[in-house]
Length: 44
Image (cartoon, rainbow, N blue to C red; front, side):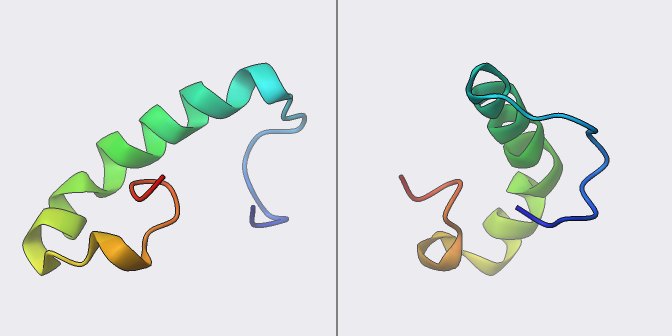
């Protein structure tokens, strides 16, 4: 994760929610470029 991430504390329990937020934010981009292979959140 980027050290400048907006969450002050991130626990293991928060990771799924963060992943969902990430997917919701970047899915349009990944769909546009069709390059999910380079995305560790979408390619798990």
